[in-house]
Image 1 (cartoon, rainbow, N blue to C red):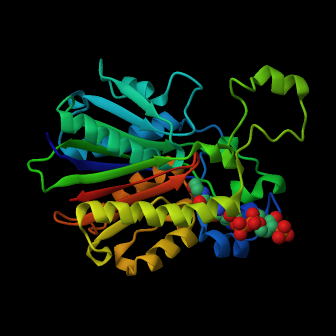
Image 2: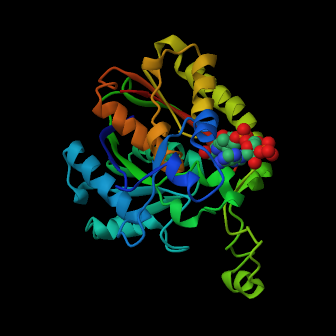
Length: 335
Ligand code: UT7
């Protein structure tokens, strides 16, 4: 059995910055409301006509992660691509990344676990590395939300939150058992699937059917969120799943060097920070600048924290996520 560890990190954000004031011009909202409820000041949206896509952003983040890992793309044995906004309905975006990176043959798997997607993907990579089946695994989280949001007042409770972007890491075998991923906790609770969902288009709601009806009030092809219900579940599940991880590895909360919570809402992250009595230097947030990028939020934040020298060899790092499904999970990493 091998431990797995992260040896390269990268991120990619589209250039186009959309501020809260920009949103005020197209829907009834305000900078004050968004800032107070979510902490968000601005997010990135892929510009119309740009060549950026879910997979291309993943490729750009991956190139940086692979270079920093000191390997070449051809050394990758497996690609795991976490997203809820794939380029196509099928095939998944992982194979598009494989092609763009000129990797002739390696398995490429999409992980459809929404905001928890990156945590699920790291846990999956860890298992493949533990068994010895694969050595170098490229783990990507990438989202292109902006093209599919209801940017009118009707959709404001959800469209002001989400942003586009990608992050990626390279994972490989750790030299010993005291380093790398020490534990992972994964959960889901499908009875709440519709509380945060995008129902159509789907196999239960094909596009011709939606187009035939052509009902301007049909919002089934926009994301839906029961915001307060999701919020209440999020704070409970974040707390439980971080606690479970701490217990498993025997760390006290004050020993955490860096908690990277999924960037769902700054108020959720602040609640969790307070619950565990963590200082500002023990938690990394960037939702203020990027909004909620679902599966991409943790790898983007992890990359930034590492780039800023906040994660170093020996650091105790905790990743935690909650989101649509509901799904949630945590990963404890001895860096
Ligand atoms: O990443 C996956 C997991 N996601 C989450 O964890 C998100 C969890 N939920 C949340 O973060 C919060 O529920 C939101 C930030 C999405 C919304 O905040 P809220 O305090 O739950 O607002 P609400 O939807 O209950 O709406 C409160 C009021 C309503 O007006 P009335 O009925 O009280 O007059 C809304 O119409 O705020 C209004 N509102 C807005 N006003 C200005 C909703 N969205 C907006 C907006 N701008 N963008």
